[in-house]
Length: 128
Image 1: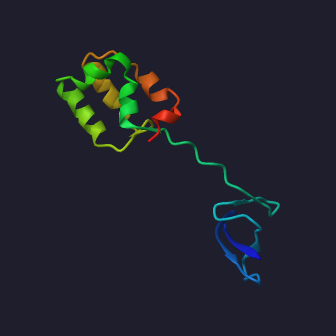
Image 2: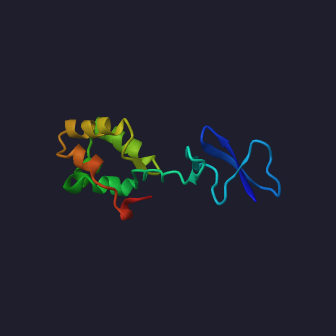
Image 3: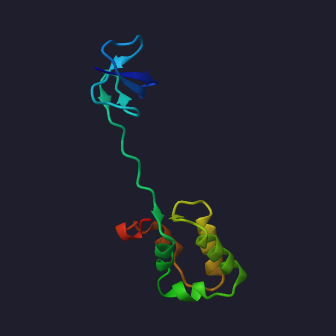
């Protein structure tokens, strides 16, 4: 039989044992991370939110017609943003410093829409 060790209403560990160890509760198919309700029943945890990660190429594609002028820019601020982006494995659209980077690109005269770039839903083909 399967038994769970529960801490603060969350399964911390599960074992298979013929006997119930003291302090452990029968858990059926539940596993680590499952939540124990006030009725003693276990429910699966909610799925984690989808990470808003996109590939570097997909990030540049979100600039539309401004993509190549931005990549060819000689503005020191834009170059710094491009260098920062290029060393990344992916772009996290929820990074706190990303709006500031887009503001640097705008300040250099590039007509981009930061809200559209950051808030557009992540498409399957954009995912790393």
